[in-house]
Length: 48
Length: 475
Image (cartoon, rainbow over all chains, first blue to last red; front, side, top):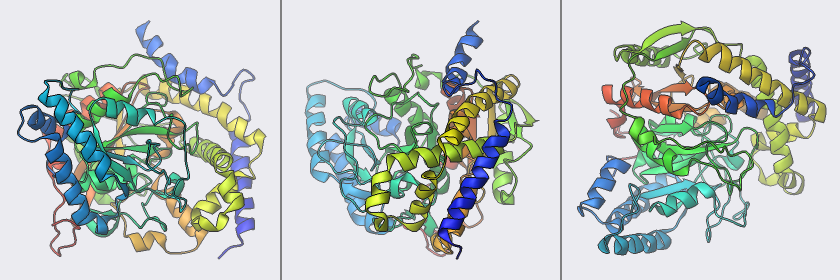
């Protein structure tokens, strides 16, 4: 069995690296509420 | 009992072939007889259910009907707060979660005439895709004893499959409605994020939590959704969109729709039997006039990472007290997953939330400009053996959990509606299942496709049955 603290540290480091890579080219205007806009905006776009 | 649906029972009640009290009593008797083995319930409220059934019967006698749920016995996951009943959330603590008001979805069902039989077993804190629970007993798959019921809404799926309840509510943060539905051979719907209020239900991860129905047919899922969906001022994320009449749209022809079958990721590592059943289902839908083509989906890995960062961070915040004060009460894998969340930085959490918006926008545009819905597997293999999924070190178990939910989790990140429904049986009788994913708030198309497929096949009519070796829990 692995050392639990080491495993937590490794998982956190892996997640942080993955997020850092993916977020490298995020637009400055991107904000958390963009998710809600992506969902709620869909119907309006199709109605137009 | 396993043959009733909301539709058939409602008809029988309306025509006085069976009364609400008789229907409720029959279900309670079956629970009493069989749940000692299946472990679907944490709390059975026989007294409350019979009192409600008697009141509903009086209303019927007076000529008043509340609609299709009048007198229909349901039960709900033990993370929904209901007045007068404890809410353990699958923990050792009898009243782990309290709320000043009843769970909105449960209250709407009750108002619509449903009888509540009790509270259903679940993975501890809704964290686990297999349905094992060290405190309340591992939920057995009614189709195959010794096999997983799936989780985390394990009791919800098992109760519906076993004939203990006509339908049930579950919650889904990474697949927790769809995974058990697939394992137990019932229907499970995760609606669009914001479609159904989560008020009065234990949060696991606010950004990813959804409530939805588990039922025996797609039509029943449409009925329940039509009742529980809609704006609720008690849930800040609930959408103000109007609720379509889902039941009325079920029979609308599906010919002319365009369905995509993913050619990347979603069939990787899926057993041949499962993959073949899902492809056969797509072929069956094609036979109904739907255009079915392969589609290449955006790489889901960034989305999976985003989901993991969000769910770990938020669940650690919500459940910090039990981790810090009573860690010994938690199952090791649950504790390990929660502890990770304490070490994720605010920077990474916020970047994940920002990324989620972009990934969702890109997915919706790229995929749904081309197709109306996706057809793919729910689980990579039929319900595994319970003892096998619990074996190994904590990190092995956590990794196994991630693999089993990898086909459902991305759609929590994207917030899209996703329906799981039966599409066959493995050679040994374990259910095989199909997932249909649609545009945001387009549950209607997802349900129409599922209903048309269901009507063209008969998998939803396969009752739990003894296998050749008599291994079904039910006889």
